[in-house]
Length: 151
Image 1 (spheres, rainbow, N blue to C red):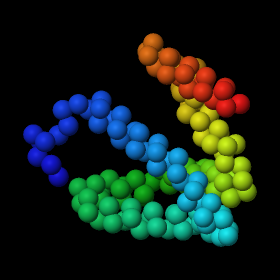
Image 2: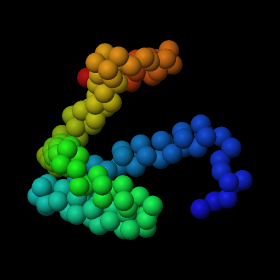
Image 3: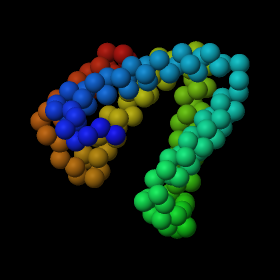
Image 4: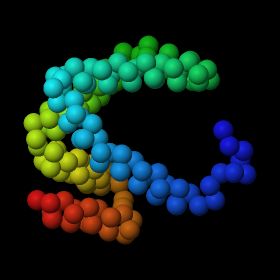
């Protein structure tokens, strides 16, 4: 871990670089899945879950201060139901994504991924009554324009 004095002095620049790296990586993910098109998508997603679980367990073991919080959460039936539902939704999401990529529908799948954040923002605004700043509305408008051009 870096000393406090070495933390980035421009968090906006650091955030923009991190976001750019993530989107660049995200844009190359279909190439990876396409290389694995001979393997059943459900098997690919099962591997993704198992290896993610293994990595998560390593992280949890290393973070001793959060161990009790994790155990308390996992002992709650309500929390387990929510986690199960979110796991099912994520599994379905990834299965559809891998299936779409491997069947040659990369543009359509990508378009769906561009639409999801827009729907989430609009749901937050109109269902949860969240307020958006002017710049946020501009960002949503630009994203919607980009999706419209793809359509």
